[in-house]
Image (cartoon, rainbow, N blue to C red; front, side, top):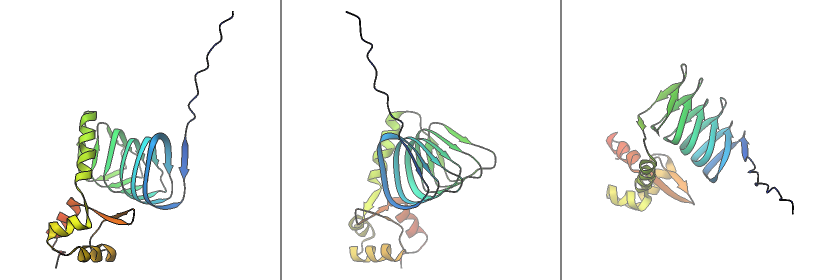
Amino acid sequence: MIGKRSKKPVMEEKILDVDATMQGTMIFKDPVNLKINGRFDGNLTTRGNLTIGQSAEVNADIIGENIMISGRVTGDIIAEKSLKISPPAKVVGNIETPSLTVEEGAVLHGDCRMIFDEAEVSSIESGAKKNSLTAEEVARYLEVDASLVLEWANSGKLQGRKENNAWRFERSTVDEWIKNEKLR
């Protein structure tokens, strides 16, 4: 009997090239090559390669593996493997990554923390979840009624994000808001 060659299944490369205005929370659990060329507001968690194109404007907290930025990004970034910022990029936010490249002509305004192992990445991700508060938790934290917190959020006085029609707030944002005497 002649032996058959077994064909290994070829993994199809998943490519998403987005040139639109989007808002919300996007989570990619499988590796994907995602390129954003338009506007995105919200939260983004991805596996694989994420490219923010030169014409893109992103207002989001981002968690990804390999991230390349050439556009405008406002938000905190956790790059589990690498982060490359190329001109004419403008990044405003804190970053955490084991490998960072900022090319001449690109702008980074924020704090940088170098991650050195996967256990630390997991710790950061779980810590980020603990620092995310519901409206009720913010109300208890500020010792006010939850309806007042929702009023502040809906009017834009207190920055937060909506997840499944419920407001979420970062503890650091609430603390900064209090520090700047916005609570009256």
